[in-house]
Length: 174
Image (cartoon, rainbow, N blue to C red; front, side, top):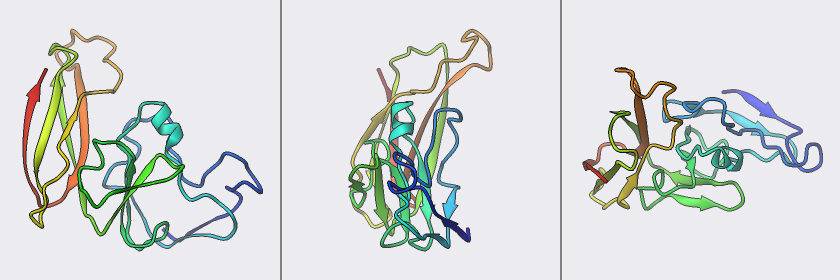
């Protein structure tokens, strides 16, 4: 919060954005992360998640508390089906991000043993707190496999952001 960005636009640094996520840390942005009182004083591009997308990171979620980046408060998420379960989420062209105005998101993280079949998927459907059906979500772990998949503590992680307060049903499929 209370940060001003400058020099992250085409006139100073072509191809950059003030907020990006790279493939070094898979848990870098989730629904606990937020922005507030952030400003841009030149042609700086606020956010670009395309590099994260290229690394296979499709579950970024950032709470824009006061519309520092977008028009209304809400969540900025990866422009992927698993993150746009709420029909109010819309793609932001050229950023690999989507904007979910006036939506409160919460994370669901599921860890399954690495001994389960690698094509195991989690399917979620249900309704948001206002009774609207969410777009059904089916996803699988895209995280790197554990170094020792035979270890008792080895697991794959599945992660999704869903509208808070909803009623959901989840099931594993192959």
